Image 1 (cartoon, rainbow, N blue to C red):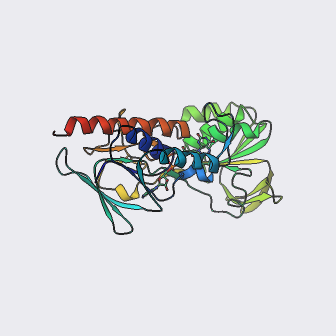
Image 2: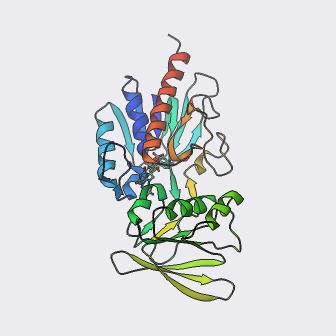
Image 3: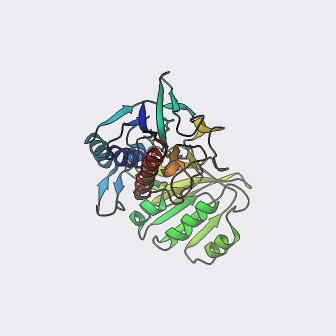
Length: 310
Ligand code: FAD
């Protein structure tokens, strides 16, 4: 039985575990893969006060910091079901894929998200070598270079506008006949001199020289012809999928599947808190996930001191 059970071992989960453990309460972390998305990241240059680090190094530091405290880390364990307490102050239950069931007075969910991939040849090979998913993170790496943005929804058009201020040229490729972004964003996009928009374009391949991206191939879906664009960077903006499928029907999720939270990290269920990329919090970033995880753990502690009967 835990006072705070954290589900997810990324930046949000690690922060929540540390904040909870520092209150001297029984804390546990269940993580499918401790470190989270940080493990898939190379250069990190916006982790404030650290000019440059690398994903695997930060992931190791996260785990080391959690291990400074008396936290029960259950790594390589997947949560498959949440049953919130039936009455305020009761125990919630979390079931794991292994068949185990854990009980806790509060739960912090921080299961993160994953970027939807194009699923074309070259994408995996050149991930972090020109194929990127986060303009806030990797935009400055392409200063003065040619880039493409895949996807003409709000996030794709925002990314293209953002990148246009940094890189030499942006080509935005949209599969459908029209961009789906808000009109105000589209107006801004079309006013920029170094942006080209191509619609009815299906990316079919990422090209590279073995070390890094050199271009992409797309199919013109109207004329059924293949075209090559020479460039150095490709930002894939076709969706961020929260890892919340296992929560459907248990707590309120937004239409995009994000866990709905308030400004204290509370979900729709009593004693269940959430933080980081899995939630409705805007801007999915490491420092934001850490702040949100800390906040959710403090809210869980506040809940405990208000519901505990001496
Ligand atoms: P995550 O990091 O996604 O962690 C989720 C955790 O939950 C993982 O441990 C996962 O295994 C676990 N989990 C998921 N489902 C379950 C389940 N059912 N049961 C148990 N555990 C589960 N941000 C920056 O600030 N700077 C950067 O430079 C940067 N670069 C990035 C580069 C790439 C390639 C990617 C993919 C992301 C990058 N980001 C960057 C974004 C940043 O990594 C995320 O915002 C951050 O990791 C979110 O933290 P989180 O803890 O909310 O989720």
